[in-house]
Image 1 (cartoon, rainbow, N blue to C red):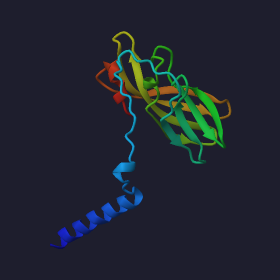
Image 2: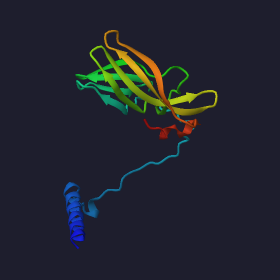
Image 3: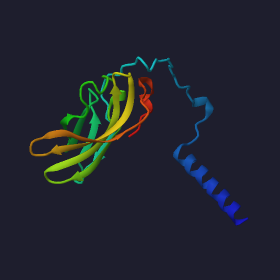
Length: 170
């Protein structure tokens, strides 16, 4: 009995909180949203523009993010300054399409001289025209400003059709 009273109290508290955050508008003043929906063939779509959803935050607050106009770059962002640290993927590993951008960036080790990252991204298999998710360790030497691709840590299986990579995760 007490459990059901507690559940009802919790339910109504949630309803009250939602109502306070999002007051109900009278239907007469509500406007219908204007939507335009179109079909897109994801197998042939080439997306242009910037991408940068994959990111990690360093000890000093520097934000490291992957993406950029080409979709294959690692950047640092500190004190309102965006710096290109280098390319993540090599020619032939990707299409020029934002879906081939990095899916995740993680900091493995951070010293005053070097930062080691683990970066995952969809990798194109040109021979089979399919894609696998891979994760590589990268080293960034701070003094020489050099990003080096080191070793492969992971490669997913199976190799999926190119149109399926929008479902890849880091």
